[in-house]
Length: 379
Image 1: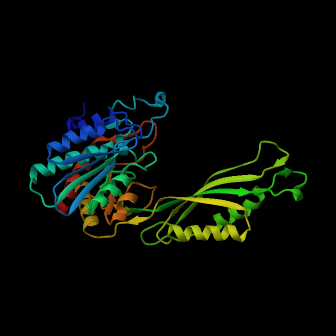
Image 2 (image 1 turned 120 degrees about the vertical axis):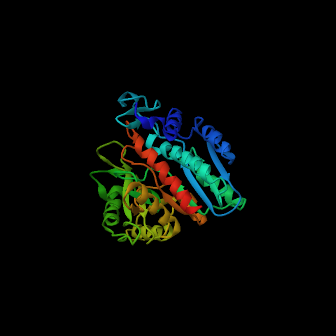
Image 3 (image 1 turned 180 degrees about the vertical axis):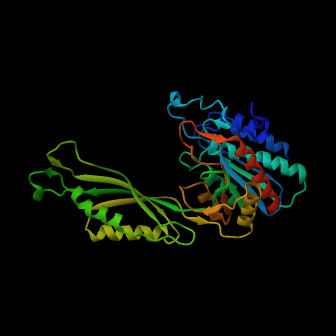
């Protein structure tokens, strides 16, 4: 057996992976963490909103507050027979632990806990406060998790200065990339209305497919922006189009579509919506368009926090990380608006959400060192 399997973070990771916490079920993960945290002197508060379980834990009553954030929920395993191992029985093969959530993001949680334990053994009277914000609602609707906890903290005047999210941020090797922000995510739900008719008599109908086609082409041709120093260019993608009644000789009366923008700070969600409506109105479409804002773009600029993260990685991995705002959304979109500097640092993300998800156990041990060093540098 690999000697690293006896490391405390690997043992804790194994205990977490065994809990089948398919979103939004915590499946006993947070009570396991609470037991460790209370032994370290943390005050732990469980916050339940509908079917979602959240944990807010804090050690210390003064500022500054360094918070670790993450989630215990995982995506469903999919076809269990397609896995080489039981997805909820952690199995180590060739130095890698296989199991759903091993990379996303129970390894991050395990490293956080052990890093804090090790730090407190050496610094029991540290300055400021250490906190954890853990949810079981990141992989799902994300309505009753981190967002609700942040609202609760705001209502009682409790603040966070810096936040490390343990999402699997690394691309090819541990620490090669960290997220210092994320693009905004804005979705449009569209309905275009026409008049149903016979394909042989188009002059007597109004085909919404024909009406929408040039609009769709124009939306794809627009260069929304070129990005900026921190953000890649805004992306427009159509994810669904439906129309037709199933008959080959009938033009439909309605078309529905859904599209998404991943947008940079060159736009606000209001200005982006206006630009889209302007295009639609120029084509005289008979349409209804509803919007859903998943999150605004956020950015942690260069400073003490980013310097500490870069230093920790350089010292322990031997390279400076790329600082990126790419990728999808994360719960950072709920934390950053409160004036919090947010950075995402975690293991390699190549296998997340896939069959045979896995994490290199050596990386988990090194990740613990990174988190511990960041605490030392900040507190």
